[in-house]
Length: 342
Image 1 (cartoon, one colour):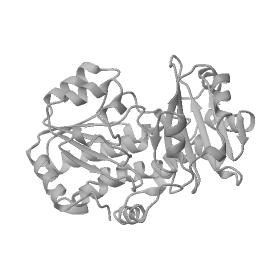
Image 2 (cartoon, rainbow, N blue to C red):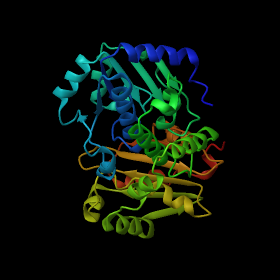
Image 3 (cartoon, rainbow, N blue to C red):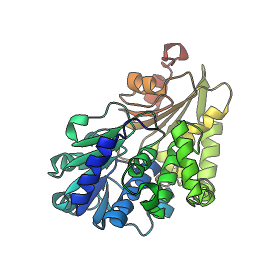
Image 4 (cartoon, rainbow, N blue to C red):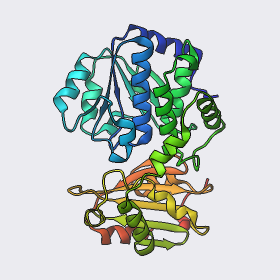
């Protein structure tokens, strides 16, 4: 069971939710399936069980690959409508932060979140959370996802699983599936127990899988094939792929369509570490995603080389440059002998 979900914390959360009429839920920048899934799950739970208003805030747009999850949902993109985002934060009486360990992960929205006067709740699975900013925190890194952690939190409240709406369960299962790469990494006994309970409750896993992994545009498949064949470098067990804005445009890739690319090199027996770097148009830096096999620390690599961090087999960071040749030269300095093994 998840250790951070204690009876005392569950009771305190129940009291906060009972007293609230307007709940604001916020997730990290470049929201992925876990952020959107956990955020929507809590929004629907609060509206269904407590009858209040709930709002999901994202620092920037959710990718089109998650349209099946976001369609018809009332989601406020703070980058497009900062006035509306501030109105929500100014009028809410409870703020929940999901899938990020500090306000800085929300970019420009972070300052407004920190300034919000409402009590603040954290539900997150990342390392090194800034617990001083929250009135109540559920934080544990050895769970698959924020979605899974949210499930155990909601399950501990009065009524248990029986009162969690089906839409919340669907969103939770989706978020967990994306963060585990469909049960390929960061899977714990609690993860499988949760999955079993959700399937028993009627969650349509096959439908989720079809939306996540069997609905690609041809452009995405063509891009992945070309990137792996012509732009992947493998040296000393480390695979690297660099994607520039010009390449993204030439492939016709949409936001969110590079999700999962970092996992592909790990299919090769000789690769233990995969590093994917992508720069967006106008950005002064490359975003870095790292995945590793057991025995190699993605977290140590991210912290030591890319000013980032994360989990042992999944982490991220950044590299301040717009020059792909500079990036390639830097990647060449990373050797397996210098990586921290766990």
